[in-house]
Image (cartoon, rainbow, N blue to C red):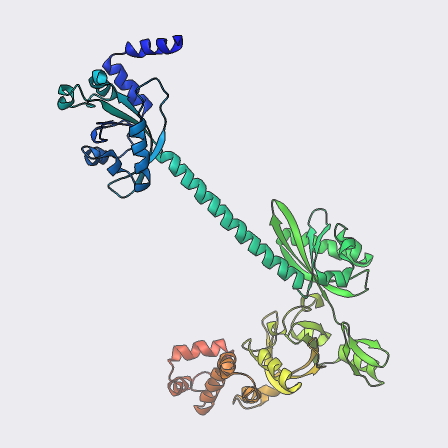
Amino acid sequence: MKKTAARKSIIGALDSASASRLVQAASDLTLVLNEQGLVLSVTLQDPDLPTSIVKHWQGKSWAATATPDSRQKIETLLAEAPSTDAAPRWRQVNHVLPTGEDLPVQYTALRLLPTTSVDAAATSSENAATSKDRHDASESRIVAFGRSLRSMVLLQQRLVESQQAMERDYWRFREAETRYRHLFQTSGEAVLIVDALAQKILEVNPAAQSLCGPAGKLQGSGLASIFQTGSVPELQALLSAARTVGRKEPIRALLVSSDVEVSVSASVFRQDDNTFVLLRLVPVPVLKRAGKKLVLPGHASDATEASPTSPLAMSFMKTASDAIVFTDLHGRVLDFNPAFSALAQIAGEVQIVGQMLDRWVGRTGVELAVLISNLRLRGSSGLFVTAVRGELGVVTAVEIAASVLGSAPGSAVAFTIRNVERRLKSEAAGGTAVTRSVGDLTDLVGNVPLKDIVSETTDLIEQLCIETALSMTGDKRSSAALLLGLSRQSLYVKLRRFGLADQNTEEQI
């Protein structure tokens, strides 16, 4: 009681100017109301509040300036406005601004006695009471002190938006992890995730488990433990080069558990400031002798009976002048002989195994796909004329004979590639090679949709038409361009594109 009396004596000793500054410091806006809740005066202390509310609120009912859900709160504030020493209660009221936005304000209301109504109005602001109020001293006034919650609401909105963004990112990462796990677990290739520094195996997919050993023994073990000792130095060089340049050409290594030769490729990625290596292990199929059968490792069911001279056949494949290549049904190289590496101008065999054969075979990149489609339908194909593009830029005309080894989904395809460059140079230019290739394409009619045939063979047909036009006009390019409905410049571009610019003599005028 003594403290309360002391506070009253201190506040009572304040003059009107000091009381006004005290009100301004304690609230962001002040409303002076009559008993019916009509706004008599609005005073703004917060510079961030829009000044338009003074004009729109003054003379209106306080409840009319608020949203429907806040009007009951205003009525409660007016009814409970204390005139005693009881502590005032604060309630949040949402106003509707002229712009349509909501303005949240926390209010408390005080009812002033008639004898102090004029003084209380003066303390709220220099303009808190009008001249009319001063003459009516018998009517009490209600003063509402408000604190703007706009900054708090903005912070809450930002917090909610941040939480929603984090939630979206969380689910996006979960979905990405689910896709990664599904791909990792169902991949037919053996994949290992290895710590680049410690060289310890962190994750193993089922394909790697069946190839290298149980996952319980692989995870946490050293990478070198699953390879034979002779393969470790080359493996260490692969990892070192991968950490330096990110990727490196695959190597061949022997596994300890199954004594299988695999092609090992490495790629580096970073996560949480740590470096990891993704290793892909692809078994290298090699034709081996198994009793009286020649089998591909992993495809024993597709073994075919071999003649008693099979060792001689294997020796012939390695020493043959014609290039011989074995691929899967998608065109990925499994094995080859030295003649093919010479034709493709590649010194090391490691750079060929695991690569797609159309990297070297085919003029336009679609011819090999057409040939493999024929092989799937017919089982074999012969006299398919195309070209081999060497790594050093030399293009060689070749003739291909191919056949599928077996009928199971994992069957291999054998290609025999013969260099016919000299023979074609002696023939008259007339597009014979291309014509024979188009003849092979016609076998696809009725088995493959027309749209797929056209999309894969557009370049081949265009080349055939250009060569035919040149033949009909005696290699006169201006006449050939006119015959084809092309400009001379467009014809020159297409000749260079198909590698025909050097095969035609200079235009005769």
